[in-house]
Amino acid sequence: MKQKRYILKEEEDSSAMLTGVKTKISIVCPAFQEQDVLPAFYSELTRVLQSCGFDFEIIIVDDGSGDGTLLVLREIALSDPKFFYLSFSKNFGHQAAITAGLEKATGDVIITLDSDLQHPPDLIIKMLGLWKQGNDVVLSKRQDLPTGFSPKQFLRKVFFTLVGNGVESLKAEYSDYRLLSRRALDSLLQFKESHRYLRGLVSLIGYPTAVVSFKPAQRFAGQTKFGFLKLFSYALDAFFSFSKAPIKVIYGLSCLFLMLSVVCFGWFVVASYLGLEWGQRSSILMGSLIFFCSSGISFGQGICADYIGRIYEQVKNRPLFFVKETNID
Image (cartoon, rainbow, N blue to C red; front, top):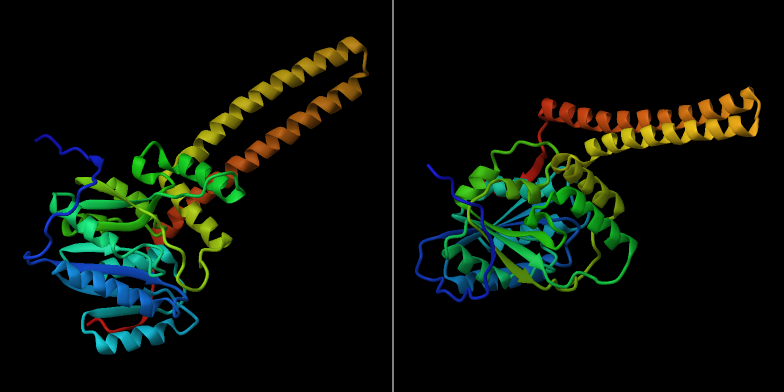
């Protein structure tokens, strides 16, 4: 049986009628220190969902916030039977929060987006239109990435170049704002990685895929919660889960050491021609070789140790998160 191809396409017209279909939509949103944004986000999200004409549920995952995020979630849940929340016992990270919500989602269509209003809820209408056209996965792509040079943007481009391996959906402009059909979600949940990079995992499941573009809004309130350390940890999870670049680096270093050995031998020949004493020539040659070779060995061991450490974490199969409170049965 011929396998169906994974097609990535951009669609402009998504004005198909969305009403009259017995479908349930699950909205999954991570939240961390978002007490000031959540009321406005909930209001805007429900407005959009009610205009779709579908049944829906909203699942917000509090990723161990230290502010009043949980209090806001409790208040909303008391007034809305379609609103559900989970609150982690501590901060387990953005990807773990999304995973927790996906595991609890009961809808036929599942949409993940951030709760800071930078992912515009109005885009849901267009995503649903693309889903009705037969796409199991709808990805979102940011339109206005910053231009010009900055260290952060430079590192971002290098990172996605190394991780992407030529996969379109792993480029820098794509986000965690996406739609999944039920069968796509069931496939995604079969991955059991401890160090999760959902953007990469979604690219592995196949199924018909479409892309929709959006312009990120300014933050409604508060500040970004992705500091350098969190971004670095997130990058490492993606890098070691979806890139073989570190292994290729070892081969590159081997070639470099071979070239250095040739250069050092040439240096030794020149030193001999100039009449330097053997003690000086041998000490310079041996010192250079030992220094470079030791650095290469240490670097290679560090990469191998990181891979082995991740295998160790996976073998332990520890839970991704612990829920201290929820209103989900």
